[in-house]
Image (cartoon, rainbow, N blue to C red; front, side, top):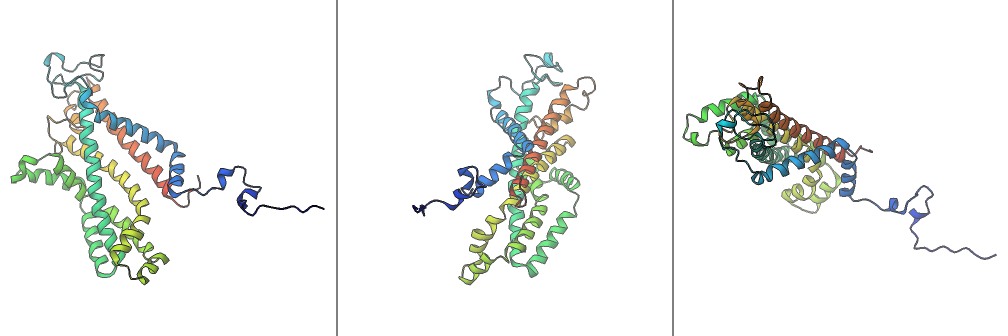
Length: 313
């Protein structure tokens, strides 16, 4: 009888009868796993597409033929038409142009306020979670103090106080709104990062790094923080939606970005008087806020499922 020989170089995974496709035997990188999980979340993919379209439209706003601040009293409160696809407001300004330019402000506030809040929250949470003890107690009590403030009331109060200070010229400016929103929205991130650091600092690879004499800064930046990025990214998506809603609410109440600069919030404020007889002046800005916020929330849900190690979807 002839002997059956086998090639020792054959991958054992290929001999597994349960493996139907050779590609399935190849290990996936973490990036591929996260992308695959995210793409299987249909609402998240849809939200990302809608958000990308809104962002591209805002970036391309200067290409639109109408000036958002051009007044034409002869064309005031016109319904949607070919010339004005979303109609005009009480001063004859093209609503589509104002929505496109207003989207630039609202999205900028969401992105920059979220960036500042994530940075502050990550620093506070990392220090509290890594060092513990007195530092942890002091930083968490500071976080509790900020959490006890009613955010909208404090935002309105700060907006009113700025009017009586030398900073009055910046009242309602983009930078002011971004800083105020960030100052009042970093606390949840700090608690989340602290909880993550408390669990990760006890891992074996952290103990091994300490045994090798690596500095605390090296351990935090190279080993712990990269493993805590999942929850931080998800929280960033949720904070973006919160910042956009907060800016819209402040502008609606008259304490946000001030006219004639267009934002979705102050467009709704201007539409209060006319929304019963001329509903388009309120429908379109409100629709843009709704689409943007729900899209960001869907993307956040998709990121949460993608970073969840227990997800097998």
